[in-house]
Amino acid sequence: MNAIPSISEHIDEKVINKIIQDNFAALAPAYFTLTSNWFVRAYDHYKDIDKFVLIIYLIHQDLIYFRQNGVKINYDTFYKDKPIEINKINISDISKDLGIPKESIRRKVLELEEQRVIKRIGKKIFVVRDTLYSAKAVDTLTEVANILHEFNKILKKEKLVTEVYTVKEIILAIKENFSYCLYQFNKFWFIFIKRWREELKDLEVFAIGMVVVINTIKNPKFKPKKPNLDSYRKEIQGSDKRGVNAMSISEITGIPRATVVRKIKYLVDKKFLHINDKKLITYNAKDSAFVTTKGMVNKNVLSLSHFIYKVFNQIRIINN
Image (cartoon, rainbow, N blue to C red; front, side):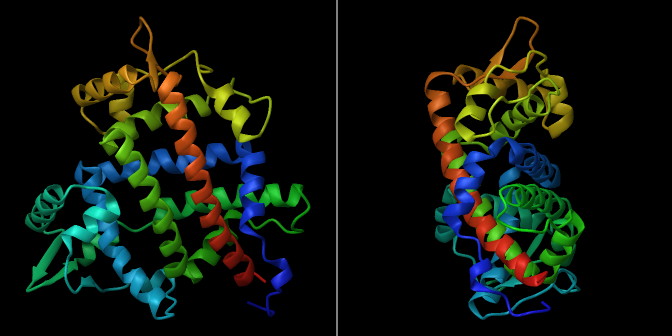
């Protein structure tokens, strides 16, 4: 920080939400890329997304401690030679925060211990250093920076700011106040994950569905006529005539093909996805699935707005 930040330069959360609502088409590719890629990476770690979420939750306890005590840790220091130490594990709290049944939490904690991903000493749990390093937010950091960069470009277009930070500048700013920024991202992400788990009961189902969604969004022929969220969600339905098959989804996610086929059937039966005579799957939510998706996206955009409000304003202070 080169100068004392001005309160007048602080961008209001309601303004941020309106900008996202009005310009969703510009943010959507970066936002959904983060979403799809994060779940693919999460599955790749332990072939069980909930296990990875549990590890991130345990790591997050350090971030809560830092936040409560006003401690700011940079990226390199956070990942330096040390395990994450948790005084005690409260199964009920984890179950409530993540929406995972208590018995599932107990079983996954035991399995992670057997895999030497975590270890217990008395009532304390340690996330071992190798686990912390493997969960390092390298790709996530870049993908978040891409979202913030696209948002920054919209702000410039709307004449709300005069500068646009590069992706590299945003990454460096996040790394400087890494514990704060990761804390804010995890808060947003845990809420996001819990909402979809409650709806679909299975995060692997969501990961599979997101591959179909991102295939639609990145179709060069998909060019929304209007940038706002309401128009975007209507125009995207059934816009992809190419589709993607179960084998390709299996290769992208790492989830076995037989499992992919079964979970696709669930999403098709629930009318989130469509499958044609050639077994190609496309995104075309109908009836209650469209209503559910609309409500979920609205809630998640509010949460995204809060995250951007917290982190983008912090980046502006750091780069002042």
